[in-house]
Length: 245
Length: 129
Image 1 (spheres, helix red, strand yellow):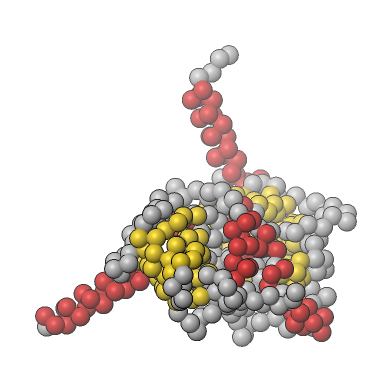
Image 2 (cartoon, each protein chain N blue to C red; image 1 turned 90 degrees about the horizontal axis):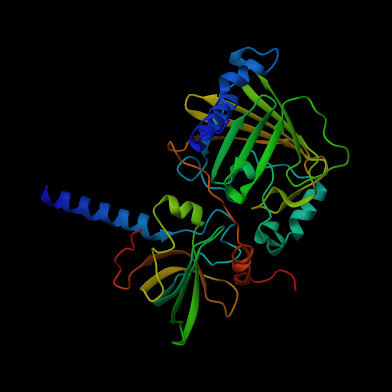
């Protein structure tokens, strides 16, 4: 049967909307009451109008600044800003990624949650189907699994690559392949809230944590392509007096 | 009463101008390693080009340095994705436009970078997206 193009697109759009709707997610996630599954779907604004911009004192303040072990302090003391991977368009990873002052889109499917970040076009997949992390596979963003619990999405991420600014890209704190990140997302009225906790026995003496929030972007806002330009990302490094020659 | 209203109006205009024209470096990196926030530098000249990109936009200005030699200043601005939300486009500033930038100078000797600059027309009037 020949179907008009408009009708075909309409059916596809309808199916996608149905599959992606929170109600369907609720119905297809086994053994959960609807109240257990928060509606996180949408594009969320984490920019300057919502929360203080990230920097040496945000989100890690005097109150929650990580307690580094001797190795962490040693790495921090020799840190050279010019080596930070962001100057070559390498994306930040958890827990810095979540506090970048840009938007984030959340899509909830029955077997996964997709977290798409406007900054650096990062896409994370949080698997809800109980799968195990692939053996010996380490990546910048790690491997994420999750579940719903008491109206919140809990995400556990492991198997990160060593990252010279993997804990914080403003204070020169690295993270290791033993980094373990736990995120808890929940709704509070119209806001999306998250508490993130980082454990990394190679660099931290104890877990470190911050809580932040997002609000909805105006209706119709779509994430664009970030398309980081590596030449311009590194341009300002010439303005720094080099620490090492 | 009239005087109070006048003061309030002037203050409002000043705030609007600052909000519109002041372009901080984006939240991609800290400005402290690259720029000296204890100093101010001014460049008044002509736009060479405006690079509207992520993670930073850059404005290039041909203008005299402190010695009077004409050099190319590189003004670091915010991420295009953020600036676009406030109405900026690649055409907001064009090559050949007369322009004035006042901001923090770059730290490395012999470089003419600037950040966190207030960008206006040479007479101080704001650039509106």
